[in-house]
Image (cartoon, rainbow, N blue to C red):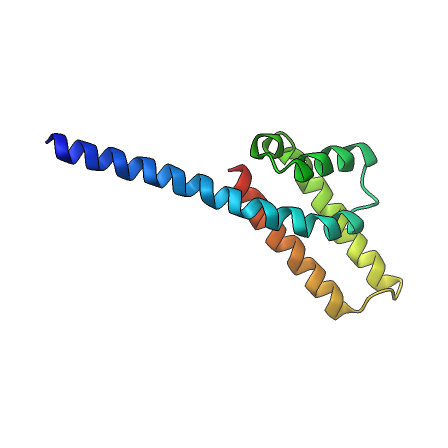
Length: 115
């Protein structure tokens, strides 16, 4: 019985460590994608963008959790920024598709990190 309890505890510790490691591995991907997304979201509230930017650049998961509520508005602004660039003829629809995919991937990674 004691061996089974010890094994269960070790499995739980390993699972928690794995979750933390996965989150930490995603932070650099989030930071890398953010640079381009921030440009597309430049029409968003500057104070919110600066707060979100500082949290992303810090790489600190606790800091990222404090700005989670800002992401939906920033995401909407970034998507609008892409649409505006297409309308202005600055980028093609194919490029816009790629930029939207970057936002989608950022969203998935960011939400996993802050979960």
